[in-house]
Image (tube, rainbow, N blue to C red; front, top):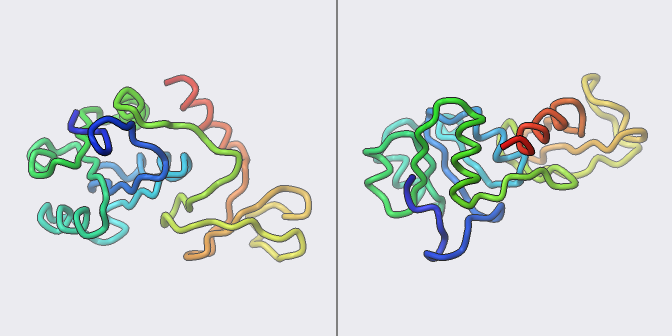
Length: 162
């Protein structure tokens, strides 16, 4: 794995900004659920290595990739070898990433935007529970609603089993 420490001696924490290459879309969702500011390359319609490197530099992001050549082109990268998302999470945990769900969602799993709690009186889409009965959060960027349901529980279980 590439360099996964910030400043050389501190483990990467949820406050750090990540850029995931085109091979890591499913991983981006897990990292966002753990509170990471995790941009996925295809969400920005970027695939070219040079553009990804420039984006990572310009935005102060650590590049997470499965591409050894791409990882070798920057000092601030994490090289993953696994194809399976659970194994990728295991590699990240072993590299010092704190992978756990917080008490409340912080990032949108769809677009990486910030989420805010929906007031109990606000309307929500038909797919979301009543915010007067269940805590619901809405992305300020795309409007997607989130709550701690079975998907939240499944991700939590996956993380506990790493």
